[in-house]
Length: 306
Image (tube, rainbow, N blue to C red):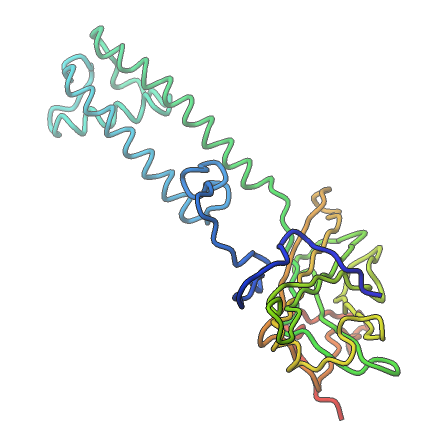
């Protein structure tokens, strides 16, 4: 039986809207006035791509050292012993700033005047705080629990036992062991019809043949049997598309390798609905030594129903 519920996406709409959940599970939602980007700096830096994060860190490192280099020039580079007169003063100040900022201290250059020592003291504090901040961000990025669960490209309406069922597949892409994997599936679609509320959403928590498995070493085919109690009853794929039907999947499992719970989400809808096909098996015994082989790159393979 499908249970009606509202997962928090709202139910009342005055016109047709675009897909609510993207294939990667993110919400197709525009927030007006929300904290985003550098206004929520920690979240922004944690979720930033690695190459952008490293680029920003490098730019920050260069800019702050340039700022302190200018300060050393303003108080006079004569207050720094061991400077190289063969290069411009700015580069002398910059290299001294780098050594002070990172606490390297090669011993070649050192402050001699009161003003230079004062600027060096401020820079040492700025360097200490900066290194602590970047180290914390690196730890936050590495320590975030993440899952690498792949989902089949399509979601099927296909024959099952004496009737039909909704099916999709998923697999753990990492070479790690997931335990106590649990999946929840929510269907939402327009109410349809000709009345003024035809674009209002209705939500159904779908009952599955198997909602939890203790071990997740192979691919897992999620099955919702279409019975008279199912919201899919009597509907074709064309009907589902007309009513903008979408499926949101929430997966939670325990990663034995990292000893932490991981979560993943996925959205299906629009042209991802498919009928007249069934999934092809993507694991089989090796012909050489009989070891069971899982072919992750065959997860999307489907075959026509005769």
